[in-house]
Image 1 (cartoon, one colour):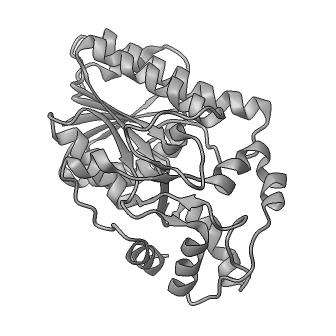
Image 2 (cartoon, helix red, strand yellow):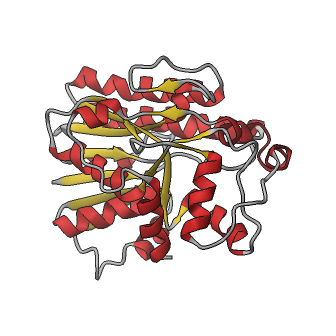
Length: 307
């Protein structure tokens, strides 16, 4: 297959490119920073990879490169784990809504159209709750991230008008040797780790390798279409997550991080961490997807052993 990928140098994208490269697929990396992409994916190891400069929210020559690709995986988006200033909130929305709009525009205009678009969303679609349980059929929430996800998914859905198969994967908190976990481990190693906020909020996680495997499954199975939760089948509450993390790295989980401290750092964005949501991957399990890491402790043990 020939697969175009945006966000290829990100936390999930780099692992996806590694897996596709190992399979012998051709990879087209659409990136704002070609020089970075060439450093991350050196030609000597990634001989089937082509890098094209693109602007996520603008039309341009880059769109022609999508013609002839078998699939597009659109992973681009500004990070949400930064302080939510008005400007950053707009960037979060634009990079997803407008970015996806331009990707869909390119697919529709392509002479030889890709057969599938794999587009992420996020479990923020459901809003936050300490008590509710959500699955792929649950209604959307009403907060900022929920509204972003609704607009993001609506733009992706337009690709179906061109007869292109669409798979939306709502990412949970992705665990691997980087990302959110890398930020949590240092306090634990200094014997200052503990749950964030009150600890009762739900932590719907997935091992990065399982998420990449789900993307690969969606690429190779023409029968898959629709929305799937990219979360493990066993979410945990924050205090349980921190207790298990402490056990794995042999450190106590005793010093809670006050909610107000996180609010100082992230502002409105702290709500995502402090309130959380319990998300179950019912549709993902129904298609027979096999998790390598369905429970948290083995997932953390595998990740920590490589850090």
